[in-house]
Length: 348
Image (cartoon, rainbow, N blue to C red; front, side, top):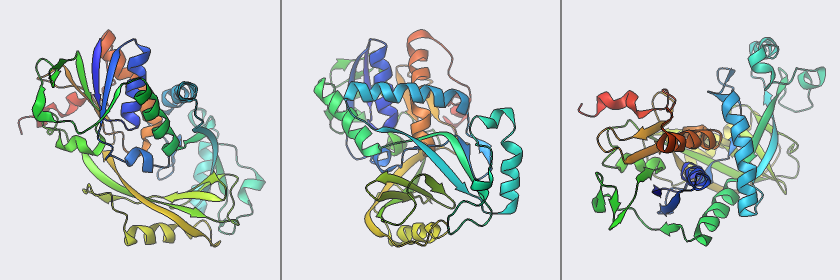
């Protein structure tokens, strides 16, 4: 089977690996403009702190991701997957009590360490209401991940670094620039909004900004979280973020974004630091916070894989596996992810 993948962010990369595992012949086109997957912190967190709930499908997503990323490390001969302890600084007594109730529930105990006296009185300057530790978290060194996988595809002669021209596509026969494919898979991230075949889908563009800071005095044994994340990446460097700016596709870092992150960081630490880098990317998000996967209802050889949002590194391995399994073996796509839920928008 011959497949063209358009886009080489985390979704496109995981999609390409799944297709290769299945024995497909794959070509990848990437315009090198969609930097969201590289800018992202790459944190895999099984909890949603805002509501203190489990992430969607976490019991399936995390084991699968934790098997696939080490395989990619071996293939690319690069280390980019790292286990992580996330320590949540509680914002109120109510949040601490909520954690205590959830930590003993069967669904949650796999991801929440039981609170100890040490956690409640952990020696952090901003620890007012106690802290809790998240289990089974990790992070991907996103720059290394992107670079290693693109290098791998390049070495196999699979990667074309060019702009995909939708005008040169025959969507019925899946012919692009004179070459016929069994499927053309669009994993375009934020640029999916400009794909004429899937323009009816409610893809949103949500800008996020991240700082890389350096400090010899900030606590660096765990990732800390309150109002923002503080992720230690080694050599006294940390990623800090993020921000949310809706309905924009520009990737220019802003002074407002920097000030927002700096203000949020004060809820974790007041230790001095130096800003080393300031980056911005645009996440592909969806109003119902679920991905968008599936074949075009009129052109079944055209397939979309988009809308992974803020949890792309956790979602991509399993969801891309499920999409490939659907295309090759006819298995069903999870109904919460299937683009059929938006078919009513096609003629509206």
